[in-house]
Image (cartoon, rainbow, N blue to C red; front, side, top):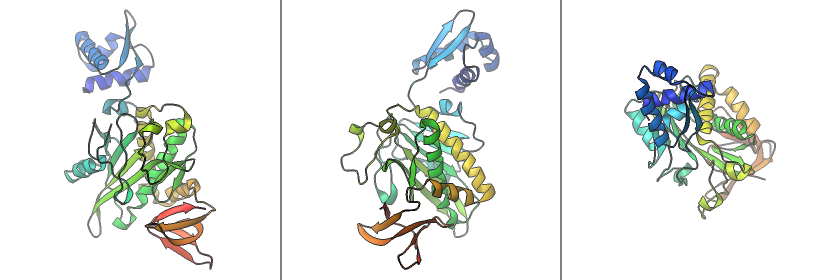
Amino acid sequence: MHQKAGTILRLFREQGGFVSGGQLSRDLKVSRTAVWKHISALREGGYVIEAVPSRGYRLVSTPDNLDSDEIAARLGAALVGRRLVCLKETGSTNSDAFRLAEEGAPEGTVVVAEAQTGGKGRRGRAWSSPAGVNLYCSVILRPGVMPHEAPQLTFLSAVAVARTIERVTGLLPEIKWPNDVLMGGRKVAGLLNEMSAETDAINFVILGLGVNLNMTLAQFPHDLRHPATSLFLESGQRVDRTGFAATMLNELDRLYADFIAHGFGPVREEWQSRCNARGREVVVSDAGSEVVRGMFKGIDGDGALLVRLSDGRIERILSGDVKVL
């Protein structure tokens, strides 16, 4: 979308009603004829805009697609979303973001796609990514922390998604170690972080976030490894995808700023308060075989799962699938 059209959308939202052609002309520093052309372009893009003589223009409705100007118009973030790349279709937003980061893209760059043909999940698993219903998003960060601290950012992502679901829908999600967000025990979001680092320094981290927003039951693959759901299936209401994306990026921005200023402690505390295993017995398995059974005792400073065994010892788990008993 043209930058002028994005400015028009921001003015519509700021004023919440009619905006005169004169004001649009002055704010955009273009003629009224040019304003009309930008309005026409927005209409061709699916925006419903009312025009009333002597009153001006009013935004009635917006199309259900993810557009950089639409998202930017709702952002209040200082860093995350400073550059937005919105794609109709891609193999993987994480792969795109990784390439952009290697090319020097600034911290806070976000890649969003309507559909992914090669969406990636944990341990190389595929992430089903149908078009026009969900949010597939990757964020480039360049934190000044040591490489061994990078996994902490996965937990930051999970908290950001959980906060956003709660704020947008009123639903109360839970977080499953290490990187899933659940509704009623079913997976509604998955997180996948990737990193480029030297021995003692991080070049960049990619936060990958996939959230099932308006997916219907028929759109889920039949061979899912774990039960999944969407916010639409849980609430019965369609989610404004642009609003959800902007809210999530704003939450990420706040959490990341807090993480840089105060470390992992606050994020860790909130993550643990939202975890589905708190106060419960868990079984950790790997490749289907049970590895550890015991009481969930939270996560440590590196994000490792802590499980108290029957003999009182605390086992530190770095990978595996967790089942709450």
